[in-house]
Image (tube, rainbow, N blue to C red):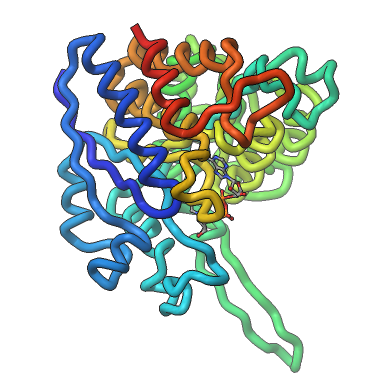
Length: 361
Ligand code: NAD
């Protein structure tokens, strides 16, 4: 298979971790006989320094022309970097928002997986973490409360703020389809999370998800209220496979699910549109405090590259090879500084990349 991948190394540790993910992808391509072509573009602070803006139209065109985009992270130290003296629309993060919009990325995917070897970092009770968990939070990214009309008014001397939560059935249907498709690649279960006992938007959400489910008789569907889901995530996370939910609930639940894994440097993510196209990036930021020291953990970015193979290119075997190599490296006792524990061998960013490459065959 021939795939064109646009890479956005970005800022801070971004270039270091993207370099390792590329190395891993090149090894997979060699072993499995694929042709990958990479093109690097600038975004965020790196683009501001060269072009004066965080994302150029040419860079957007390069992303649109690719089969998928692999990103490191963008942004600098928000207190000291001159990028944050600029008006908000010229700051690094504005580039990412512009790109997500230009690419119509409406579905955000965040896996939360507890590696047996890192179970010590899990803040849950041992009897819960012992069962392990492996879930995927699928969050609607472009609708709902964050994109509804909002205003603050003063009525009779009293300040009042109004935010509106709107979803139409097409917005719900397209993300539900993605959720069911992804469940089919996993353990075949969707938990749709809403607040249907209170909100009209949730009642429509539930109705449309039920309609979509009819086309997926092989996928188990359950509905769960968001407050219950927040509790279940810490009480019994092993019950979840795909959690499908709207924008604000997903924002909160995906952070909760990430935190129970306990390891920020291990968390990958993807944002998809309604074709196979996606933007793949680690969940963490650009970590300017450790940039340029070769100590960042590249695994979140490497696992994001694995998601790219699985969800944009349908190369499941190849994605399994990367996931397996990451597991093996952890089993063999190698750790970057952020996941280091007694008795393990500490390695840097490059060495971690090399060790993963070695384990792909
Ligand atoms: P951060 O995730 O960059 O860092 C938080 C802490 O985790 C830091 O101590 C950092 O050293 C550590 N850390 C993060 N990733 C690591 C890794 N791979 N290996 C080892 N340690 C790691 O969050 P922050 O400090 O709040 O933000 C820094 C910058 O990143 C800001 O400019 C912020 O806007 C930006 N940011 C960008 C994205 C993105 O590009 N999508 C997401 C979040 C934050």
